[in-house]
Image (cartoon, rainbow, N blue to C red):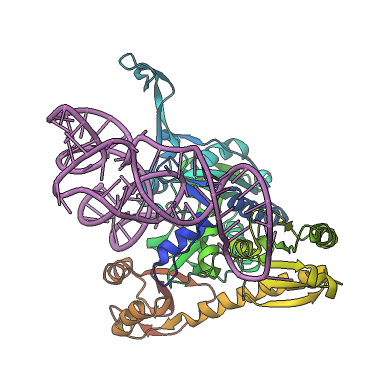
Length: 492
RNA sequence: CGGGAUGUAGCGUAGCCCGGUUAUCGCGCCUGGUUUGGGACCAGGAGGUCGCAAGUUCGAAUCUUGCCAUCCCGACCA
């Protein structure tokens, strides 16, 4: 199999597609805008999902499952939310097919089987969930409700890209209900922290936590908190969002509770989600021209062992030595594959596992066994070293941690180098055009100005960073007074 | 959805302008053998609705129309 990769410099988009497809994470499907997530890619998602799921449970959440279909009348109940998603909804209108009387072997939609009410395929589940919560909540004693759902959603996007924007994608969506505004706001920021911790500590992608401006806010939210990451091409990527929904959905679905003072009040809500898009972030944050670079903590495979045979008689000797190494790695909870497939030679395997981003490669032949060593190669730096077989598993365990740290530090350094302050319009435009990355600048706080800046530069306000330092200044476009800088960037 | 490009075996391609026997080449794949420290070699072999559909024609990969898909640039978006 010829697996030449496009380089980042030659064509960044093509490089990304090559990694996804040749790295066997996903493939195009027969359905427009939808992808097949292949076993290697799905194993990565499972690892991400498992860690997140554990973090959600540690913060008191439980999982549930709600229907894929949302009756149109429920969907339209929260006006802003409905409006925001209306343009990208897939809708089920019929429930039956029948044989085409004019063409043998063909099916047509049975016009007799039109649904009384159309069903919207969920682009997000607030509507169906809040309609359900109405029946769950009577008293303050029923609150809070801390539910998460792992699901697929459909958003009929005009232009799709593997993992970054597909018509159907996998995600989790948390939907919580609270008795007070304070508690709901606290939940919103708590989950933002969970996301930031996950993305930084497990995916090794540094993020900036912030709040969205009104323009970029989730449809139906009072406030949208987000984590923003920077990709190697200098574009920003929204990696996760946590929304404070106020009482909007409670009012739309009439969800009230009786408080301690025996008074009816509307419930306060949050929702938060991350999706398979995170895989796109991971790819673009760490990978290089040789292929993917998987962060050890969530890598589908952490260690691969490649034997270097010399004649038939060497095989049992090497296989036997490797068996012990595999056992000691597994005992430490390290995932390992011994690739003694004899159809491909070592050089081919080296390239293949580099493409797939396996963090550590172990190679050994008779020469090494005589010296009681193996050759260790780390994916992040491509450095090779000879390491003693005694204590190898422990050494690799530490090496995996080093790699995890190293790729995070590398991404962090890149991110920090690419946040620049602009103090004039000319400087602002020049930075966007020549440097990419985030530009920190003053803004007068109005949607009109934000729109104009977007129109002229294609840059949007990614977020107003949390714990932003206050600083008097003048808006980059209008010169009106501003109390803080916000982060602009061109984004995915 | 608007503009541009592309579509020939799993992948990359020649042929198309100027229609004419059995659609070119490389990689990969299968069988056997030799091999194995950075994408091995020899011999033999399999694999094609030329993106799909209609039309023009004695005859279409090639000409015409429609559709589909992918990529790039916009608008929209997690």
